[in-house]
Image (tube, rainbow, N blue to C red; front, side, top):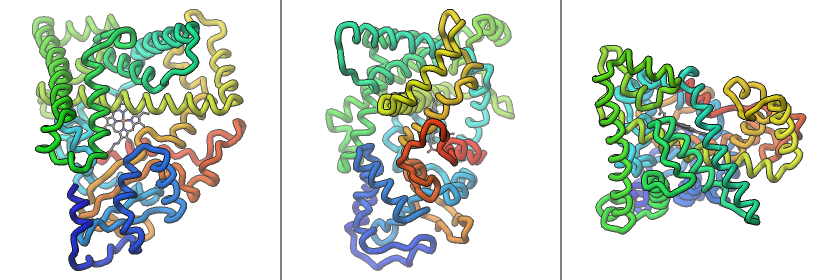
Length: 435
Ligand code: HEM
């Protein structure tokens, strides 16, 4: 909204952005550019690809006379931004603000010291020993989804919306991993899961309704009221689990609690959050725990559902790859009963792994992320991203940039996977976490 007003404003032309020059035509197009980039439509994808082809590493749009947006789609320019300390390139609030009433100050939306402290406290949640037992949960959830598909196929259904089914499966898995709660949401309606799906859809819809970016207007609309109601429901659920867990923790004592959990071999995310302490021995508040748990439910379900749906799409379009993946899995499981993938198997599926990576390259579930640059950042060739600009890091543009991948639109022959060089933006994100 702020940007739209600036665009129509008349005023003195700003000094040229020192880093990236701009022609009048690009300037006129900026609304379209940003709008299309946020939209996950076919046009948005094609537009982003064309930007990378035209500009190579970055381009810049002036938003009215004062504001510039720099869009980057090359690793050499992305690195200095992602590796800058969190205070120099914090997340840009405009792009994430609609999630705030739902996700609060969880890792995705927090910044500064709070983000650094929580990031350190949550690192143990990603330890292999915590993640390994979740494989059982993933297998169970996927088996439920497969059984549904078999049933639909036997009834003669020729079409189904994969993304819908896979989203329910990822939410089912997450609810079990985060809260140890089984809502059977894949088999019957669950109010809580329906609320998360509704919140995700409402946030995405609001991005395209510029007038409703204003809170006071949005909350007067039926969508705004639905958003408030769904937020309340989700928060109530998370609060209830935290309260219940807090009640059992003191009576049991931390050691007994951990021992009991060690027997069942599953420490869920709420446990990790309740047990984590910072360097000064300070625990997370209930509000912090709720924000982190809600953030994981959101961040974890949509991304993985989108990623998996695209993998299935690509395998369906390329039967020769599908066949090689199938043979690889069948070979691995041939002498095994029950036929379930275990943690250590993941390293034994190189071809399937390459197909997943290639699919994530072609259709990254998070196509763009944004940062607000608070101090000049110098890129390797000496150009400067000046203080005050918003940086859009186009994951999609980078993955389709012909100066990074020759023939980025062509899927290499199975014998030539992975498509060199496979660059994972998520690795850059991890390495450049700035904490
Ligand atoms: C294919 C799957 C996934 C993709 C492509 C993905 C992608 C991303 C990206 C690009 C960001 C950076 C956002 C930014 O810095 O502006 C991010 C952050 C985050 N993701 Fe994911 N994600 C995936 C799966 C998950 C899962 C399964 C979880 C949790 C269960 C998760 C939790 C988070 C959290 C908590 C953050 C914020 C981290 C921070 O700022 O410190 N993600 N993700």
